[in-house]
Length: 339
Image 1 (spheres, one colour):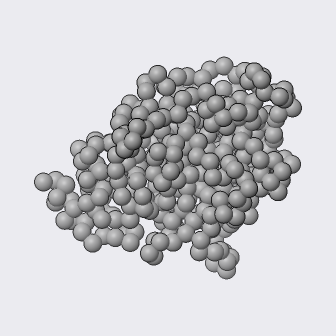
Image 2: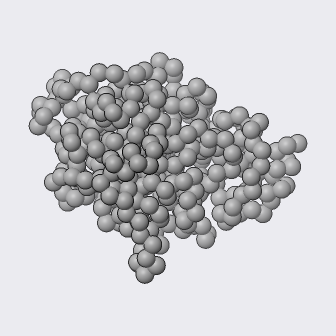
Image 3: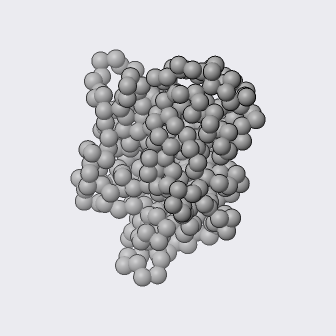
Protein backbone atom coordinates (compact mmCIF):
# COMPACT_ATOMS: atom_id res chain seq x y z
CA UNK A 1 0.00 0.00 0.00
CA UNK A 2 2.85 2.39 0.87
CA UNK A 3 4.47 1.94 -2.53
CA UNK A 4 1.20 2.42 -4.36
CA UNK A 5 0.43 5.66 -2.50
CA UNK A 6 3.89 7.05 -3.11
CA UNK A 7 3.61 6.15 -6.78
CA UNK A 8 0.32 8.07 -7.04
CA UNK A 9 1.79 11.08 -5.28
CA UNK A 10 4.64 11.26 -7.77
CA UNK A 11 2.72 10.43 -10.94
CA UNK A 12 3.76 12.72 -13.76
CA UNK A 13 7.04 13.83 -12.17
CA UNK A 14 9.28 13.21 -15.16
CA UNK A 15 11.93 15.00 -17.21
CA UNK A 16 14.16 15.61 -14.22
CA UNK A 17 11.84 17.74 -12.10
CA UNK A 18 12.84 17.87 -8.44
CA UNK A 19 11.28 15.13 -6.34
CA UNK A 20 9.65 16.00 -3.03
CA UNK A 21 11.12 14.49 0.12
CA UNK A 22 9.26 11.48 1.46
CA UNK A 23 9.99 9.09 4.29
CA UNK A 24 11.90 6.17 2.78
CA UNK A 25 13.53 4.85 5.93
CA UNK A 26 11.58 1.58 5.74
CA UNK A 27 12.97 0.75 2.30
CA UNK A 28 15.90 -1.65 2.68
CA UNK A 29 18.79 -1.12 0.21
CA UNK A 30 18.95 -3.80 -2.53
CA UNK A 31 15.38 -4.94 -1.81
CA UNK A 32 12.60 -5.47 -4.34
CA UNK A 33 10.68 -2.78 -2.45
CA UNK A 34 13.26 -0.09 -3.20
CA UNK A 35 13.39 -1.17 -6.85
CA UNK A 36 9.59 -1.00 -7.10
CA UNK A 37 9.56 2.35 -5.31
CA UNK A 38 12.06 3.98 -7.68
CA UNK A 39 10.32 2.63 -10.77
CA UNK A 40 6.89 3.71 -9.49
CA UNK A 41 8.05 7.33 -9.53
CA UNK A 42 8.34 7.25 -13.33
CA UNK A 43 11.27 9.64 -13.16
CA UNK A 44 14.44 9.81 -15.29
CA UNK A 45 15.97 6.42 -14.44
CA UNK A 46 15.17 2.77 -13.86
CA UNK A 47 16.17 0.50 -10.99
CA UNK A 48 16.70 -3.25 -10.88
CA UNK A 49 18.51 -6.02 -9.04
CA UNK A 50 22.29 -5.59 -8.83
CA UNK A 51 24.03 -6.61 -5.61
CA UNK A 52 22.84 -9.22 -3.09
CA UNK A 53 24.98 -8.49 -0.03
CA UNK A 54 24.19 -5.62 2.35
CA UNK A 55 27.52 -6.00 4.15
CA UNK A 56 29.43 -5.73 0.88
CA UNK A 57 27.78 -2.52 -0.33
CA UNK A 58 29.02 -0.65 2.70
CA UNK A 59 32.45 -1.02 1.06
CA UNK A 60 31.33 0.74 -2.12
CA UNK A 61 31.63 4.28 -0.81
CA UNK A 62 34.88 5.02 1.03
CA UNK A 63 35.58 8.66 0.13
CA UNK A 64 36.42 10.71 3.20
CA UNK A 65 35.75 14.44 3.44
CA UNK A 66 38.35 16.64 5.10
CA UNK A 67 37.76 20.02 6.75
CA UNK A 68 38.00 22.77 4.12
CA UNK A 69 41.22 24.30 5.48
CA UNK A 70 43.07 20.95 5.27
CA UNK A 71 41.64 20.26 1.81
CA UNK A 72 42.80 23.64 0.50
CA UNK A 73 46.31 23.08 1.85
CA UNK A 74 46.62 19.91 -0.26
CA UNK A 75 45.16 21.17 -3.55
CA UNK A 76 47.28 23.62 -5.57
CA UNK A 77 44.38 25.68 -6.92
CA UNK A 78 40.59 26.00 -6.93
CA UNK A 79 38.98 26.87 -10.27
CA UNK A 80 35.45 28.27 -10.52
CA UNK A 81 34.11 29.35 -13.92
CA UNK A 82 30.73 31.08 -14.23
CA UNK A 83 31.28 33.02 -17.48
CA UNK A 84 28.05 32.67 -19.48
CA UNK A 85 29.88 33.44 -22.74
CA UNK A 86 31.97 30.26 -22.66
CA UNK A 87 30.81 28.05 -25.52
CA UNK A 88 30.49 24.39 -24.60
CA UNK A 89 29.05 21.67 -26.84
CA UNK A 90 25.74 20.04 -25.92
CA UNK A 91 27.35 16.59 -26.03
CA UNK A 92 30.86 15.45 -25.09
CA UNK A 93 32.24 11.95 -24.57
CA UNK A 94 35.95 11.56 -23.83
CA UNK A 95 35.87 8.02 -25.24
CA UNK A 96 34.99 9.43 -28.66
CA UNK A 97 37.45 12.33 -28.53
CA UNK A 98 40.46 10.24 -27.43
CA UNK A 99 39.62 6.73 -28.70
CA UNK A 100 43.24 5.54 -28.56
CA UNK A 101 43.51 6.10 -24.80
CA UNK A 102 42.40 2.71 -23.48
CA UNK A 103 42.00 3.71 -19.84
CA UNK A 104 39.18 6.19 -20.56
CA UNK A 105 36.82 3.42 -21.64
CA UNK A 106 38.03 0.92 -19.02
CA UNK A 107 35.78 0.18 -16.05
CA UNK A 108 37.72 -0.88 -12.99
CA UNK A 109 36.31 -3.03 -10.19
CA UNK A 110 37.24 -2.00 -6.65
CA UNK A 111 35.94 -5.35 -5.36
CA UNK A 112 35.41 -5.69 -1.62
CA UNK A 113 37.54 -2.67 -0.78
CA UNK A 114 36.57 0.90 0.18
CA UNK A 115 38.84 2.10 -2.63
CA UNK A 116 36.71 4.24 -4.95
CA UNK A 117 38.79 7.29 -3.97
CA UNK A 118 41.98 5.55 -5.19
CA UNK A 119 40.68 3.52 -8.13
CA UNK A 120 38.94 6.42 -9.86
CA UNK A 121 41.60 9.06 -9.22
CA UNK A 122 44.33 6.78 -10.54
CA UNK A 123 42.12 6.05 -13.53
CA UNK A 124 41.94 9.74 -14.51
CA UNK A 125 45.70 10.10 -13.99
CA UNK A 126 46.11 7.30 -16.55
CA UNK A 127 43.68 9.02 -18.92
CA UNK A 128 45.51 12.32 -18.72
CA UNK A 129 48.93 10.75 -19.19
CA UNK A 130 47.71 9.33 -22.47
CA UNK A 131 45.98 12.54 -23.57
CA UNK A 132 48.87 14.86 -22.74
CA UNK A 133 51.43 12.54 -24.36
CA UNK A 134 49.34 12.37 -27.56
CA UNK A 135 48.81 8.67 -27.02
CA UNK A 136 52.47 7.74 -26.61
CA UNK A 137 51.98 6.81 -22.91
CA UNK A 138 49.02 4.44 -22.91
CA UNK A 139 49.23 2.75 -19.51
CA UNK A 140 47.04 2.11 -16.48
CA UNK A 141 48.48 3.32 -13.21
CA UNK A 142 48.33 1.31 -10.02
CA UNK A 143 45.52 1.85 -7.51
CA UNK A 144 47.25 -0.87 -5.49
CA UNK A 145 50.26 1.38 -4.89
CA UNK A 146 48.13 4.30 -3.74
CA UNK A 147 46.15 2.02 -1.39
CA UNK A 148 49.23 0.50 0.22
CA UNK A 149 51.90 3.20 0.05
CA UNK A 150 50.08 6.52 0.51
CA UNK A 151 49.97 6.26 4.29
CA UNK A 152 48.26 9.60 4.91
CA UNK A 153 45.62 8.87 2.24
CA UNK A 154 43.74 6.05 3.94
CA UNK A 155 43.62 2.95 6.09
CA UNK A 156 43.86 0.50 3.21
CA UNK A 157 40.56 -1.19 2.38
CA UNK A 158 38.96 -0.57 5.74
CA UNK A 159 37.83 3.01 6.23
CA UNK A 160 38.17 4.70 2.85
CA UNK A 161 40.47 7.57 1.96
CA UNK A 162 41.00 11.07 0.57
CA UNK A 163 40.92 11.45 -3.21
CA UNK A 164 42.83 14.72 -3.28
CA UNK A 165 45.70 13.18 -1.27
CA UNK A 166 46.12 10.58 -4.01
CA UNK A 167 47.03 13.45 -6.34
CA UNK A 168 49.58 14.76 -3.82
CA UNK A 169 51.12 11.29 -3.71
CA UNK A 170 51.27 11.21 -7.53
CA UNK A 171 53.13 14.54 -7.54
CA UNK A 172 55.56 13.73 -4.71
CA UNK A 173 56.25 10.02 -5.21
CA UNK A 174 54.99 9.02 -8.66
CA UNK A 175 52.87 5.93 -9.33
CA UNK A 176 53.84 2.72 -11.13
CA UNK A 177 51.70 0.82 -13.63
CA UNK A 178 49.16 -1.83 -12.70
CA UNK A 179 45.52 -1.90 -13.71
CA UNK A 180 42.74 -4.37 -12.97
CA UNK A 181 42.99 -7.71 -11.15
CA UNK A 182 45.69 -9.78 -12.89
CA UNK A 183 45.76 -7.02 -15.49
CA UNK A 184 49.52 -6.70 -15.82
CA UNK A 185 51.86 -3.84 -15.02
CA UNK A 186 54.21 -3.42 -12.09
CA UNK A 187 51.59 -3.59 -9.30
CA UNK A 188 48.23 -4.89 -10.59
CA UNK A 189 45.15 -4.84 -8.35
CA UNK A 190 45.11 -7.90 -6.05
CA UNK A 191 41.49 -7.75 -4.87
CA UNK A 192 39.13 -10.13 -6.65
CA UNK A 193 36.47 -8.55 -8.87
CA UNK A 194 32.82 -9.33 -8.29
CA UNK A 195 31.03 -11.89 -10.47
CA UNK A 196 27.59 -12.51 -11.94
CA UNK A 197 25.91 -15.67 -13.20
CA UNK A 198 23.43 -14.94 -15.99
CA UNK A 199 20.78 -12.47 -14.82
CA UNK A 200 21.41 -13.20 -11.15
CA UNK A 201 22.72 -10.69 -8.61
CA UNK A 202 26.28 -9.40 -8.56
CA UNK A 203 28.11 -11.54 -6.01
CA UNK A 204 31.08 -10.38 -3.94
CA UNK A 205 32.14 -13.08 -1.50
CA UNK A 206 33.11 -12.23 2.05
CA UNK A 207 36.59 -13.62 1.36
CA UNK A 208 37.10 -10.61 -0.91
CA UNK A 209 36.92 -8.26 2.06
CA UNK A 210 40.65 -8.20 2.69
CA UNK A 211 42.85 -5.42 3.96
CA UNK A 212 45.91 -4.28 2.06
CA UNK A 213 48.60 -3.20 4.49
CA UNK A 214 52.04 -3.76 2.95
CA UNK A 215 53.76 -1.23 0.69
CA UNK A 216 55.86 -3.45 -1.54
CA UNK A 217 58.14 -1.00 -3.37
CA UNK A 218 58.89 -3.62 -6.00
CA UNK A 219 57.20 -4.86 -9.15
CA UNK A 220 55.42 -8.17 -9.50
CA UNK A 221 57.57 -11.12 -10.47
CA UNK A 222 58.16 -11.29 -14.21
CA UNK A 223 57.51 -7.62 -14.94
CA UNK A 224 60.19 -6.25 -17.26
CA UNK A 225 61.00 -2.95 -15.48
CA UNK A 226 62.11 -2.13 -11.97
CA UNK A 227 59.89 -0.20 -9.55
CA UNK A 228 61.72 3.14 -9.75
CA UNK A 229 61.96 3.17 -13.55
CA UNK A 230 58.24 2.43 -13.86
CA UNK A 231 57.11 5.58 -12.02
CA UNK A 232 54.96 8.28 -13.64
CA UNK A 233 54.61 11.63 -11.87
CA UNK A 234 52.01 14.36 -11.61
CA UNK A 235 52.80 18.04 -12.09
CA UNK A 236 49.96 19.68 -10.13
CA UNK A 237 46.46 19.19 -8.71
CA UNK A 238 43.40 21.42 -8.53
CA UNK A 239 39.76 21.55 -7.44
CA UNK A 240 36.97 22.35 -9.91
CA UNK A 241 33.79 23.95 -8.56
CA UNK A 242 30.60 24.15 -10.59
CA UNK A 243 29.48 22.53 -13.86
CA UNK A 244 31.20 24.91 -16.30
CA UNK A 245 34.57 24.57 -14.59
CA UNK A 246 34.32 20.77 -14.71
CA UNK A 247 33.07 20.67 -18.32
CA UNK A 248 35.80 22.96 -19.64
CA UNK A 249 38.49 20.95 -17.90
CA UNK A 250 37.18 17.61 -19.19
CA UNK A 251 37.07 19.00 -22.72
CA UNK A 252 40.59 20.45 -22.43
CA UNK A 253 42.51 17.97 -20.28
CA UNK A 254 40.45 14.79 -19.90
CA UNK A 255 38.20 13.07 -17.32
CA UNK A 256 37.77 14.47 -13.81
CA UNK A 257 37.32 12.72 -10.46
CA UNK A 258 34.18 13.86 -8.62
CA UNK A 259 32.96 13.26 -5.09
CA UNK A 260 29.25 12.58 -4.72
CA UNK A 261 26.94 11.71 -1.85
CA UNK A 262 26.03 8.03 -2.16
CA UNK A 263 22.32 7.45 -1.57
CA UNK A 264 20.96 3.95 -1.08
CA UNK A 265 19.05 3.89 -4.37
CA UNK A 266 22.20 4.18 -6.53
CA UNK A 267 23.09 0.55 -5.76
CA UNK A 268 20.02 -0.45 -7.80
CA UNK A 269 20.69 1.80 -10.83
CA UNK A 270 20.15 0.16 -14.22
CA UNK A 271 19.65 2.88 -16.85
CA UNK A 272 18.63 6.46 -17.47
CA UNK A 273 19.68 9.70 -15.77
CA UNK A 274 20.14 9.08 -12.06
CA UNK A 275 18.71 11.44 -9.47
CA UNK A 276 18.27 10.85 -5.74
CA UNK A 277 14.89 9.38 -4.76
CA UNK A 278 15.56 8.28 -1.16
CA UNK A 279 16.77 10.18 1.88
CA UNK A 280 19.24 7.67 3.32
CA UNK A 281 22.91 7.85 2.34
CA UNK A 282 26.09 5.88 2.99
CA UNK A 283 28.56 8.75 2.97
CA UNK A 284 30.60 9.81 -0.04
CA UNK A 285 31.76 8.08 -3.21
CA UNK A 286 34.27 9.04 -5.93
CA UNK A 287 33.44 8.53 -9.62
CA UNK A 288 35.05 9.55 -12.91
CA UNK A 289 33.27 12.14 -15.08
CA UNK A 290 34.04 11.56 -18.76
CA UNK A 291 31.51 13.80 -20.47
CA UNK A 292 28.00 15.18 -20.57
CA UNK A 293 24.87 15.45 -22.69
CA UNK A 294 21.13 16.08 -22.77
CA UNK A 295 18.32 13.55 -23.10
CA UNK A 296 14.75 14.75 -23.64
CA UNK A 297 15.48 18.07 -22.01
CA UNK A 298 17.42 16.69 -19.03
CA UNK A 299 21.09 17.66 -18.76
CA UNK A 300 23.36 14.90 -17.48
CA UNK A 301 26.92 13.97 -16.63
CA UNK A 302 28.36 10.81 -18.20
CA UNK A 303 30.29 8.97 -15.50
CA UNK A 304 32.39 5.83 -15.07
CA UNK A 305 31.94 3.95 -11.81
CA UNK A 306 34.30 1.43 -10.16
CA UNK A 307 31.73 -1.29 -9.40
CA UNK A 308 32.64 -3.49 -12.36
CA UNK A 309 30.92 -3.93 -15.73
CA UNK A 310 27.88 -5.81 -14.36
CA UNK A 311 26.51 -2.69 -12.68
CA UNK A 312 24.63 0.05 -14.56
CA UNK A 313 25.34 0.51 -18.26
CA UNK A 314 28.33 -1.85 -18.37
CA UNK A 315 29.84 0.12 -15.52
CA UNK A 316 28.89 3.60 -16.74
CA UNK A 317 25.97 5.77 -15.65
CA UNK A 318 24.35 9.17 -16.19
CA UNK A 319 23.51 11.60 -13.41
CA UNK A 320 21.65 14.92 -13.53
CA UNK A 321 23.83 17.92 -14.37
CA UNK A 322 23.49 21.57 -13.45
CA UNK A 323 21.62 21.18 -10.15
CA UNK A 324 24.48 19.80 -8.03
CA UNK A 325 22.79 16.42 -7.80
CA UNK A 326 24.23 14.49 -4.82
CA UNK A 327 26.75 17.37 -4.41
CA UNK A 328 28.61 16.10 -7.49
CA UNK A 329 29.47 19.61 -8.70
CA UNK A 330 31.00 20.73 -5.40
CA UNK A 331 34.34 19.02 -5.80
CA UNK A 332 35.82 17.94 -9.10
CA UNK A 333 39.44 16.93 -8.52
CA UNK A 334 42.05 16.75 -11.24
CA UNK A 335 45.70 17.34 -12.06
CA UNK A 336 48.13 17.32 -14.93
CA UNK A 337 50.91 14.79 -15.52
CA UNK A 338 54.60 15.56 -15.70
CA UNK A 339 55.51 14.65 -19.28
